[in-house]
Length: 259
Image 1: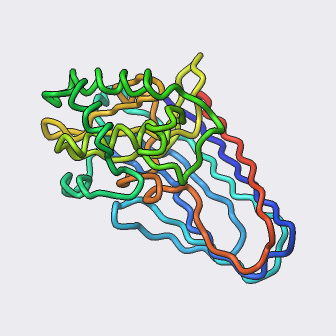
Image 2: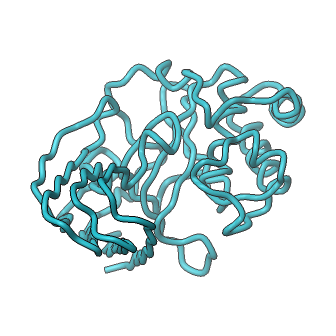
């Protein structure tokens, strides 16, 4: 299956930005799970491409001229491997994804929750845990932010795919299982959580297993991988620093279509 992606992010500022550097992770790689036929990221400024510590493609854009608006546009076509049952493999030591992060700390209540639903921590019980997490934290847009931690989302019992992934990863790491955060795109007809997406993966039996808690999907057939990391901050699509600019507003549009 081939998927076409159109991802546009538009920024507006209340005062001119004098200088800025944007760190962009919106470029998928070809791997055992997917083949990138075409991909382009359009962004103003001087650009440099390299890879980060997790082998994600990292585009840096530096702008020296004043501006009040900026648009970053990513477009491309990716073909999915129909035989793919597991997440994309890499050369990284899975134990790297046991490292604690501020976004994936596990509270005592979360530890007890994990032990209740996955005392053996095998694949079948982790699916049961993923189901329980979604039941406990219903998908609720616009109530959390990128700064919401796993503990915060668990306590307030609401969130989106990012929060579901952080909570599930925190619990899996407590259970002693390497778990990673994946950012990318999703195409599944007739579901409410489409396009730009995040999900968790757990390393079991020498393979990365998909746990898309928000959609209760456990094979990555329709998932385009863009970046992997320990949490959202390792894979954030756009991060940056700027001089001046006043207040910032952002609007993002994402389309994922079969082609």
